[in-house]
Image: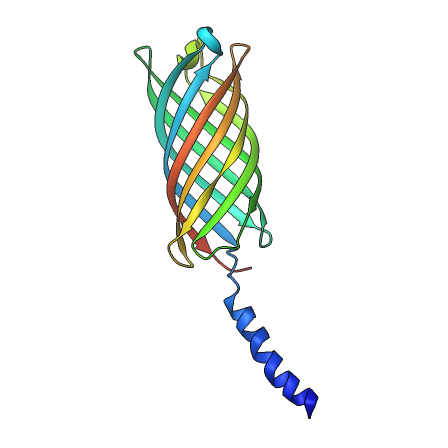
Length: 180
């Protein structure tokens, strides 16, 4: 009788706990606005300019906290009176902290490439170079299917034998598909 009473008390508690756990989306697609603060050199020799654009990313969540993200950013603007463009494509691991109901903080390190048009940082012809993006952000969960993402990244690139330490800020809408 004691066992039956114990099971009667414990089973509803486990059931309530399982129901309260967050569902983990299989895939997250995000898109929105991006801002690039491009920097060349450092100190008094450094120059800086800004480009606006958009981004799109796809994240596959392998479990509650780990996934892989493919991200594309495209920028355009004017540098020294010349119309320039730049695009990045990067991929890497994402670590998410899914302990809160309304927010999901995350961090990532991604490697890939940056392609820039003629005139970007003074280059004489368009070029594609190595890029490294490291940073993180937070998803503000509107409901189980949608969230608003705010993200900041350090973007390292190398043009003209100089390292550029750039700042990349993006915001947008996240749409979630499937369940883990």
